[in-house]
Amino acid sequence: MARPRPRRAMRPHLAVRLARIVVPAVLVTALGLGVASAVMPGDNAQVAYPAPAATASVEATVGALGVRGQEVSRHIARVPIRSVAAPKPKQSASETITPVPRLKVTDSKYATTDLNLRTEPKDDATVVGVVRAGRKLSVTDTVTDGFRYVSYHDKGRWVKNEYLSDKKPTSGGGGISGAPCSSGSSVESGLTPDAIRVHRALCHRYPQIRSFLGRRTSSGYHGQGRALDCMISDSTVGWEVAKWVRANAKELGAMEVIYRQQIWTVQRSSEGWRSMSDRGSPTANHMDHVHVSVYGNSGTA
Image (cartoon, rainbow, N blue to C red):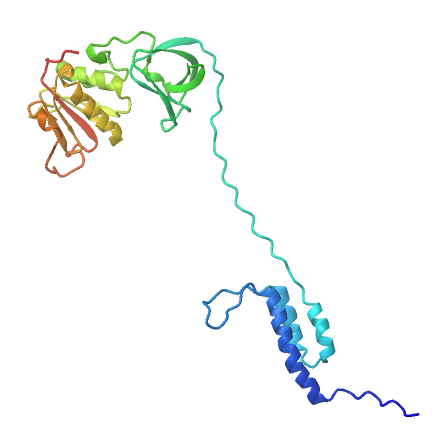
């Protein structure tokens, strides 16, 4: 009986050939597990992100080039695959919400001017309605940052407390208020009746006006007490003021209105608003205030 031939050991040159075939395949397989994206010839460059653990195992495999081909698969099995957790989304900062006070009516007051009804006691809070001058409001004792909590159609709203009065304000013709301003009448010193009339009408109708400037040393209408500057930063409201004075010029005794380098006069009323030349500064060009000139004592309001 013929004896079985003993298994010959793998020839050295054959092992080298096998390593040349198997090891590149191992590298491609292992690197494929740890690379997010590869750069192919002719494609646009992309960024690859190798997984650290996988790279370390591949390096160990490359270092073991002397191993037999049948042991290479065991090295591949030992390459760990690490999952990367997605970053948690950042949470937005919580907004501060003003607590809603109890709507307990304790008194009633009158609006001395048109009042904005707001959802919160803030100047930039949402306006949900307007209370006309002279209207009676049911109010609470809650006052926050200059705003009073009132009841309007059985809902809690906020209005400027300084424009509420215990007495119903008197008004002249056309709904123009002639009541003294709650901020005081120091600006009225030296003004003519028409200029005082404009001051009181505007301070009640437009609480957005920051301040008023009246008589001053000059050779113009201000020096005669026949002019008033209404300082305001909101140009939208500024134009409302200018147009309202123009529309009620006869009742107010106004003869001239200037705002944002535009002028209107009674004498040239049919021409509407006319452009003015540049006077060199925002204030000189009336960009930050409405200027009103009056006759003196001809208003009917």
